[in-house]
Image (tube, rainbow, N blue to C red):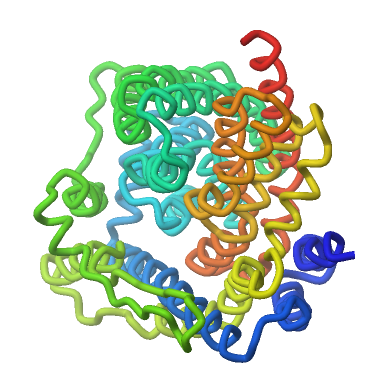
Amino acid sequence: MPYLLALLPILLLVVLSLTRGVKVAVLVGAAVTTGLFFYWGATAAHFMAVMGASLLTTINILMIVLGATFLYNMMSENGLITQMTHSLDQLHPSKEIRFFLLAIGLTAFFEGVAGFGTPGAIVPLILVALGFEAVLSVAVVLLFDGLFAIFGAVGTPLITGLQIPLGLSDADVRQIAWMAAGITVLVGLLILWLVFRMVAHSHGELQHRRQVLSLYLFMAIPFLLLAWLAAELATVVAALTMLGLSVLYLKQKGVQVNLKPWLPYALLAILLLLPRLSPVLKGWLGWELAFEDMFDTGIRAAIRPLASPLLPFAAVGLGVAVLYRSKSLYLAGPLKKMLAVFVVLFPSIAIAQLMIHSGVTQPSMVRYISEMLSGLGPLYVFVSPFVGIMGAFITGSTTISNVVFGASQLETATVLNLNPQVVLALQLSGAGLGNAICLFNIIAAASVANIQNYKAIMAANMLPTLLAGALAGALGWLVLAIF
C-alpha cells in the first residue's frame, strides 16, 4: 500500500496536467501530497519547515523569471529584438535553419553557462521574435535543454549531484560522464527527429533537414569528446564550437552579419560565466542566506541571492536602458507576471519538498518509489533512465534528481550485479531528459513567453521524453551487454 500511495502525487500531476491543466494538477497534487505527508508520520513542524524551503526555492526561480523578462522587455522596447531577427536574415534566408541554430546552440550555451533554467527564460523569446509559435518555441527549447542539462552549469549535476554525495573517484566520474554523453548524443537524434515533426506540424514540411543535422553534429561531436576530457566545460565549449562552425557553414560569401544587437546577450553570457572562472568572485557571490534546522526538524533551506542570474540580467537591462536613454524600466509587466506564476509554481515545488522530506517515521515517498522499482531485477536497466526523469520531474533539477536517486541507483546496481557506472550514467541522462517535462521549467519558461496554457507544453513534450527515456534504457542495456 505505501508503494502505491508514494506514486500517487506523481500520477496525479501527470494525469491532471494532461487532462485538466497544470494549475488544477498542482493544486490538487499539493492537497493530496499534504495529506500523505501527515499520513507518513510527519508533524506540523515538519510541514512548516517544508513550506519554508519551498518558498525559498520558489523565490529563486521567480528571480530568474523577473530578470529574464526585464531584460527582454528592455531590449524589445528599444528595438534590439527586431534588429536581432534581421541580423539572422543576413546569415541565412531560411527561418527553419535560424530556428534550429538558436534552439540548439543558444540553449546549450546558456545551460552550460548558467543552468537555473536560464535557457527557457531566454531562447524561446528569441524564437518567438523570429515568427514561431510560443508553445512550440518553449517545448523545443525544453526538449533540447533536456539533452544538455546532464552537465548543467559547469558540471554541477555530475560533481555536486553524483561524485560528492557518492564518493566517486575521478576515474569513475570520467566514465559516467562519457557514457552519459554518448547515450545523450544518440538519444538527441531521436529528439531532433521528433522536433522535426513538431515544427513541420506547425509551420509546414521542413526543407533543410540535412543542414540542421549538420548543425546538431557540430554540437554533438565536441560535446562527446569533451565529456571525457573536461565534462564541466563540455556544454559551454561545444556550444561555442557549434555556433562558430555554423556561422562559417551557413554564411554566404560577401554577406556581413550585424552582431551589434546581440551584444547585450553576449555581455550577459560573460557576466554569467565570470563567477565560474574566478574563485574569488565566486566566493563573493556565494553568500548564502541559510535557515538551519527549521522548527527543530533537521530540515535546512538556503538561497544564494547574489549567485542568481537575476543580477546579470538586471545589470545588462539597466545598461541597455542607459545606453538607449529609455524613458521607462517597464517593470509593471514582469512584476505582475511574477505574482501570476507564484500561484502555480509554489504548490508544484511544495509537492516535491513534501515527498522528499516525508521520511520522518518511515522511509520517504521517494525512497518507497526507488525500492519498488529495484524489484524489477535485470530489467531495471530499462527503467533506470525513468528514475532520473522522475527525479527531475519531481524536484525540477538534474542535480537534485541525482542527489535524491543517485544513492539508490548505485545500491540497486550493486544488488543486481549491474555495472554501477552504466546505471549512474542512465540516471544522469534521465535526469537531464526530465527537464523537458519538469513543471518548474514549464511554468517559468511559459510565463516568460506569455503562455498561460501550460498543459499544451506538457502534452507536446511528454511523449518525446518517454520515447527518449526508453531509447536511453535500450542503449544502456546494449552497453551492459558489450562491457
